[in-house]
Image (cartoon, rainbow, N blue to C red; front, side, top):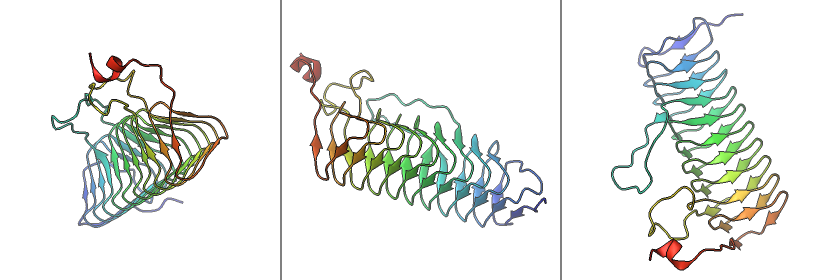
Length: 238
């Protein structure tokens, strides 16, 4: 049975919505032109849905969330900022209050993005994942299916997390042994790889280019180092 849409007169909806699709857009929410909302979507007060955003069936975007933030380098970043101005959020996913999702992000079906989480450009998140409260995914983080990333964890740029991995709270990751002194190079600036089914304990630190194997366990508070064959001038300059 078709259900009428419920669009608050205080919302700004520039996009064309399907008729009688059970879509709800609440007070002071903004849905920009060229956004696409499937049936059953709910957009809570003060949420922002940018142009080029696609929300699958029954996606819910809570208060103050931003889906469609343009990345800005502001002249301060060594890495060149580039992105495609599109976002895809899979069916039945939930975006928590004040979460921020940048352009050029794909989120699978049945995913939970927690309050105040941040997902930057070029991130790809699989199905049935949890990106919990205050988690930050930096640029180009690849997350498989069924992954859980718990509160206040940071996954740095060029990190890979394979299917079924569990990453506990307050985990820190790094991707640059030169700590920005050597400029930016994708071939050198690489984050950790966390293998299928691996478990990372609370407050562990994974340093650049580390590899945690499938089904491995990293203890809480551990520091994981990579063995790097690199000359000093490769990092610090001649």
